[in-house]
Length: 409
Image (cartoon, rainbow, N blue to C red; front, side):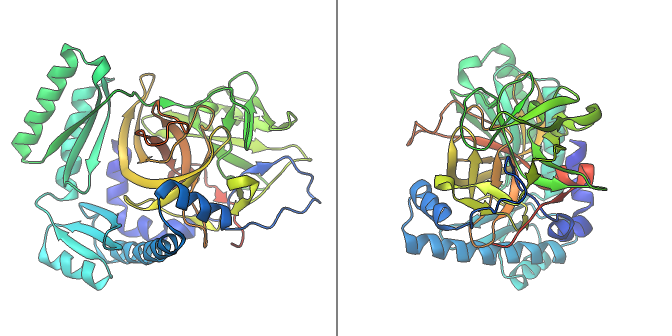
């Protein structure tokens, strides 16, 4: 929980400079430097959004324009409010950004920023305090409890449970959490499913993949540069656990070194992210993410994900799929580790997608994060419940003083 508290404390200064702090980014390709890259096109992204979000061409373009306005409003809200609001989300029905506030003064500031205020009884501080209590009760994990986090639209918290793993401890934990909610008068929702999230490393071949020497196959997130002449790419922390491990590209040739010095992999409460240095002369990094039909998408910067916003995900197993961000700042218990600060989407994914890219709309795609895990439903189960989980990119860049490699849309 410490990271969440730091995030709130730095709201006024850091949130306003998120985009400026993140420079260039993209996935590495095994292509000699002199070879030109294909010209990126937004067509594949628009087609995928129509397919996965059930929209026609006019609806897609209208929605993207509305989301652009909502992101501008979100930036204005961050500059205007002195502390984080109780919640922010994109309302696809009205096409507006909604901001949860507790007072009339903040409501007026939100209107002036171009967003719609919603007055709620519980502020962010109260929600965070309840989350801290839940985390303390959970300790190192409770059987059947797969995670918890703020429910921004409900002005409460949500606890997620796998009903197939329920035990007496699960029932006792649920009872204690509901009692905490009753005492604080904050709504507590329990979401039950038959799925347990898992970190999605694997051995499926396809798409933009990379291979840690002795571990499974994972996906490239975004290319980065760093101090000196450093170049590399971001991926999932559970793909980079072994220090100084050889990293191989999709063609089987060595591209660099994973988790150099043992200081570039995180897979605990702080997050799920890792760094691979690209240090072989025949490999370079680009600002591209593999899109639909092999058409690349060029990343132009980084952006914070908001609930309700559309996004697309690229992974070496599932390929290119789109959806919406359903929750942010969530705690996930994967069974082998508990991780805080993750975001959820309803785009599909598959084993082997770990570390893959999450980006925003096609007019000027922004990096959102790297793939951490998902539920059992894969991309062949269209119509079924899907869940994918990503690690927001901003924290990774800050951690190791990196800049995304970017290009022009």
